[in-house]
Image 1 (tube, rainbow, N blue to C red):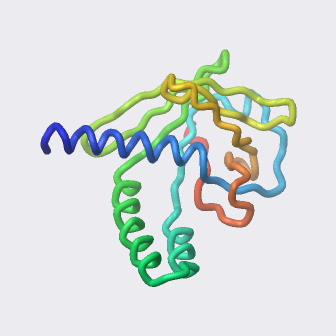
Image 2 (cartoon, rainbow, N blue to C red):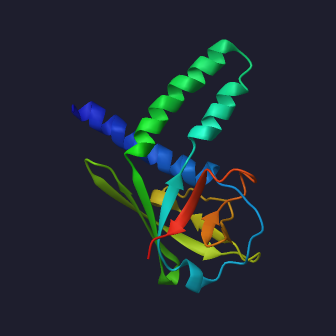
Length: 159
């Protein structure tokens, strides 16, 4: 793999990680998050193939549908090769590890429980990206409020 391809691949992984954190999730009956429930390592689960298929089915034009299908195959291939772990530590420290078959990258951020009792993640990769999504604890998994009915993206505790 050339240097340019490695940089593009690395940039794509970071972009997918940030977009995932900012854009995906779902909500339902949630309980307030407590620090003791959050501390530990959580794996980000990405099951977005069905959501992408629905978007393609709802496309306004054939060109839009073809574009969505091409992108979905590309994204699915990348997502299948990536494992993302969030390690919530004391003192609101967060370690995010992205593993692929070829390499592992680590980013750091912060987390806090807001006044409503939901988890929020901020300062991912020291780029001052503030995430306004509220992560809720529902049936032992962490979810955001972007997709109420679809359980396409969530975090499951692994330790």
